[in-house]
Length: 396
Image 1 (cartoon, rainbow, N blue to C red):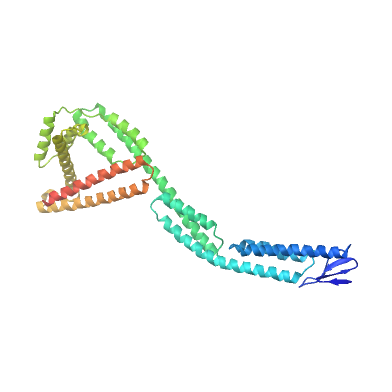
Image 2 (cartoon, rainbow, N blue to C red; image 1 turned 180 degrees about the horizontal axis):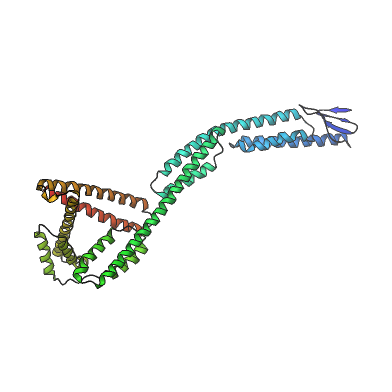
């Protein structure tokens, strides 16, 4: 028997020495002693180089956990290696490496739990954003970060994943519900516009006196209907205008001046007179006269009609909400009118704020939609202005 470091030769067979719990093992047949020893030493050095390369790669990265399986594989295959070298030392080296990786993984999982906690707080904040598009962009970015974050501690991983998943699902469920509801609402408004067109067409056979109040009501209903896509709205508006042919009014400019001056002297007006006067002014409002005095008088006349219409509406509510309203004293009647007008004003101001908020939320690249919202806002501001003026008149 011939012995040498880490092995021996017996009966032309080369053995690796026993180490740890592993007994001595045949690793080959000897044909040339020096060549065989050199060959099996080279095998060991090649394996040792793999371990050293793995250690170097681990030292150069923070994601040490990804190398755990590789290190375990080296430890498992080491006893089967046909080589000559210090197996015991190399085994200890690999075991130390595995222990380092496991320690790092444990630390990373604590850190990952903190990162995932932060991502959950971020995604909660993103779901509170008013603009769906902005919220979605942020949430998808947070979701990507979540997928690239390793697992947290076993005691926290399931709970964190469940919480993140629930927030994510809830957001996209609400987004779907919002757009489904929005589309349903738009479809409802479209059907309402179409119904108003059909109502306008039915008026063609009526006389001017019969047609006038009904046509005015349809116009008001048209203005108060909701917002739809501009292309569809323009199409329906053209159809409505065709069915809603303007009534001819045979007034000279002098007669218009007389009419407006007459309005200024009126203290009270009936609903039927209100509709009649408004219809008489409509063609002149649309013509856009360059006559400055006429423009000023038209503005004044229209404001007076708006104020009169609001007063009639308020008085109608007073009679509905308060029995024997007209039997109350003038002071009591006025107090009721003021109270109801304040409530209406507050409602209009709230609706204006909603419109302005919506104009911010949905005002992006859709200029047509923005134009429709702007018209709604302008109309709402006009309503508020009339109610404030009415309250001033009450105070006077």
